[in-house]
Image (cartoon, rainbow, N blue to C red; front, side, top):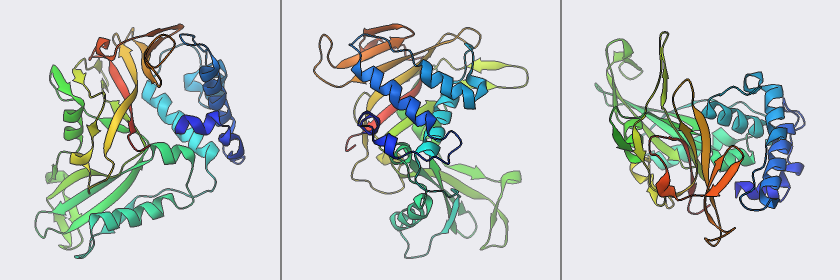
Length: 316
């Protein structure tokens, strides 16, 4: 498990001293995890050492102003990946032309090997997934596949009062027609052609971080979508959104980052699952709200508040 890597202190022997932060971000994260797991139940742990370290290398997160939780998550994951990677290389997009006898699974495996060569870290092993973007020429039906790694998925929210996480995933992977000014340059036709573009998951991560796009910004306005998004606690299947069959494609919810209020006076809080027997000081869902920690039922969550959801694959 991702947390065990830090709780067993394996991270201390995996630090990249040549990274921008010299391993200090991973060390600070490990220190906070140790405090969380050694403290009594219902006890809040101030992450001061982690916040100080983040602020040193990302000044936008200093002070007490509200910042975007997904921006913080990406900085944290990217920074710890740099701190813990054991080799250096740049990660590039790969264009893969599918031959007649080339299956999606073979192409994905080949691309994954090239993706992660020299780029391993425990962060990548836990959160790293892969998207396959397939563009199909309408004229000659030639296919081009671009494979792009991700540490979290950002999903659109339908313009409805009520929706679901599965509907958000469906909108994210819905086929898109490229035409007009967005025509695709087809090498087979040697010209610009209309094409269909689809997104599919070609590598499933052990930990799936899903960001819901609740906030939108223009030059003149800032808005928050308050759509109520229902989500499964157990058994989220990614099979309908995958490029190929996976033996293990079901996920169970582990934590949620919640945002209440609006753009001017919003507030972040979280709900996390603690493993163990449900009961006093035992397992179950716990609500973390600043310095207050209490047991809470998942059914009590306001469905207009989920912002980032963390799912764990069942074989992880």
